[in-house]
Length: 444
Image (cartoon, rainbow, N blue to C red; front, top):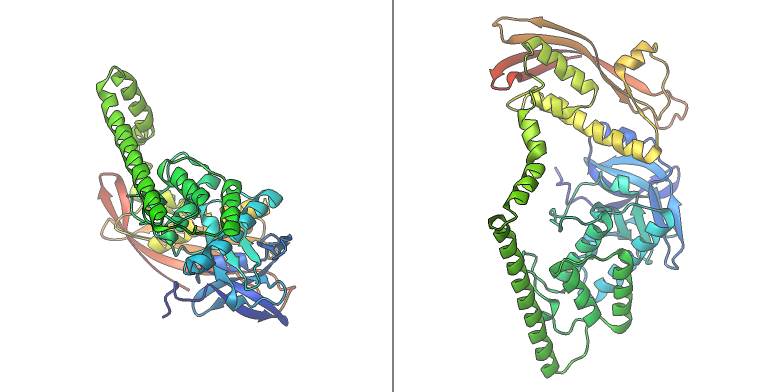
């Protein structure tokens, strides 16, 4: 089976005689394909090489070799296979990378202002550059669904979403120039004295001194760097002088950090001990409150815990479902609830309306015909009976899930699949109370 990270990030598809660009989202998963396939009028944005921006409608989704691709319209004569993701751009030579990097940052700044977008670090997963210099950006809500290919990055606390995005962009640039990716950041002049001063100073201020910058500041600095050249022409004496300058600034920053750390450790030993204890109490209050709060399982019999588990599934409450189980029991059902919860939040944020319908509510309404933008899920008709030995139980219920209609029949109603499921459940008494230790299902 092909590893998901080795599958092409972009590829071409044809639908109704039209060439479409497919952007890999994640491995095929239940629920995600059906919801993306309903279409969304605000799926992506495009900025052409002249700087004109427009919205692109969604064209559904497509499965290919275990991967799920989101389809969008191709602008002009662009070849989807030549669209490069941000990850692929990082592989470019530094001289080719910086001009294209500058263009992407300028496009992000323009799209944020023109369409009032909330951009964050995950935006980079949905950013693409075509072979003619146009830029595609997926809706920020869609970017959150794309499988991560870069290792997670810790950013300084207290930053806004845009400031975190700028920090990550500058960190990628820092490493591209030749900086180390570990925690021992130094002034760029220490390892690349010829770097354009304005850009080197911005990297120093944001990455080492932990000052903040917005997309506009980064965009202006990059445009000036591209116009003047990434690297300056310098004689050996000036190179050495600038290297010493970088090392001096790096030492100064290390001393400042050590002093800051020293003062932080000294504070509890000063006259502010009392205030420090109050602050600690405030910080740990949520944890203390949670520790002292009774468990949702407290006082429940085994049957009641099973009922709570299925009620939590119908409410997409995967946290309570996990509390009801131990040793990884019912993991598939818990994961499905967590996934549907994320999808429901994303779609509600994008479409500004509720798209999910509980099976029990749908049945109570007489099982009306559903439009393609509604999604039925959940269980009904739950019956629980005790078995022998006493900790063994059987739960019989109906499991409901919407299915994708025939894509060639636009008038086809949305189908709802019904399964009658029998599950043997083994309960275990723990310090939290009764918990589900085994959850083995069979059904038709």
